[in-house]
Amino acid sequence: TQPQGSIFIRFLGWILAKVFRHTVTEIEIDVASFVEYARALSTLSNSDRPNVIIAPTHRSLYDFLIVSYICFSLPELGLEMPHIAAASDFSRIPIIGWIASKAGAFFVKRGEAKKDPNLSKNLSMITQSPTFIEVFIEGKRSRHRTFLAPKTGFLRCLAESNCNYIVLPMTINYEDLPDQTSLLNEANGNRGGEMSLSALMNWSIQAFSGRINVGRIFISVSNAINGLNMNSKDPQYLGCCIQNHQQRRIVVSEFHVRAASLAINVPPKLISDALSSIGCCHWPEWRDKGQFNQMPTDLAVQWSVMLHFGHALAPYLPKSYSRWASWLSPSNLVFGTKVQSNEIVDSIVSKIVLYFDAAEKSANDVITMLKEKGFSKPNENHVMQQLPNDGKVPLFLMNVAVKILLHGTKCTTPTKNTMRVTEHEKK
Image (cartoon, rainbow, N blue to C red; front, side, top):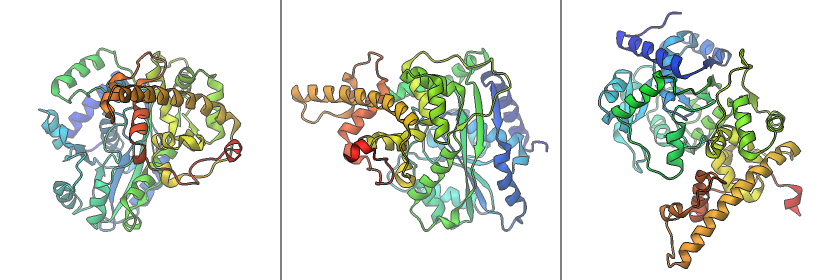
């Protein structure tokens, strides 16, 4: 099947092909995962077709580009070019905002406590006839590759529109990230760089000069979720359901395993065996095993790469680390299942919680020091400015510890079935 679209869309497709060729080793599509969805959709008449909500994971600005590109270049997957629910920040960038609009984007105000009337209006107009919409339920990119708690604004508006829709959870697996450095910089408490045309031009120069290589990318989808069956439920439940489906399609490559090995100083085989023992999917075998992305030497980057599969370890954390578990996997609060003790996994978890303990100790020492100096209620930013940055513990982990210690009451405690209680804890 040949790609279809306007001259503008075809030109964008040509540009994206050039970008991926210079920055990605391989993009692999799990075509088999699309078969059931495509087959079911092909049997429906136009009048019976639902709106399709494509819900990808969100780890990079590449996510927008990848989804649009595969919808354009592989129409046999059953996906048409989607309308993209993009952050309103994009609309203010010269040229980029115009290109996004031409590509089918509509802009959403992010982080608003109240309902966005423009979102409801846009959805009402877009869904008058069956169409495809792309939305990131996490709202923004994860700064350290953990799953973020799903946002409910879009899902609530969708339910209120009373349109017929299905949600197609999509998982985009990266080895490295093109925006890894900037994301970690924000995770460390620094102000993120604003999106601008000049920033895009600087990045493009790096990309086309061969200075950016994200390794391999693997895209897969889960079974579609019938939206009408979910409208009676809380939007938070639907968000967690989508996220749970996304997590099932996470795959782990040797790159992730080796980075994790460096991060917590354990043999790669131990990590690989632990992940296999809990049913974590391994990346499909690569044709050229001799080519791997250069392994990160920075501890924070190694941890970030390891957190690609951090959600799989969340249920195995001891009960006393419940808030860390909910940070690793927010949807585990709803879909957590009781797990059996696993000696291999426990050996990995025991190394990880040492870093959690060290992060909490550093954060607590700074809070105590500030209180002794007369700051009875030190705020988050004040504490973060005083944290040690000696490279022994990733700074972003200490920032998470600060949030846990200062705002612990805001972290929902998992249900009793979410966490495993070890025999030691029972005693």
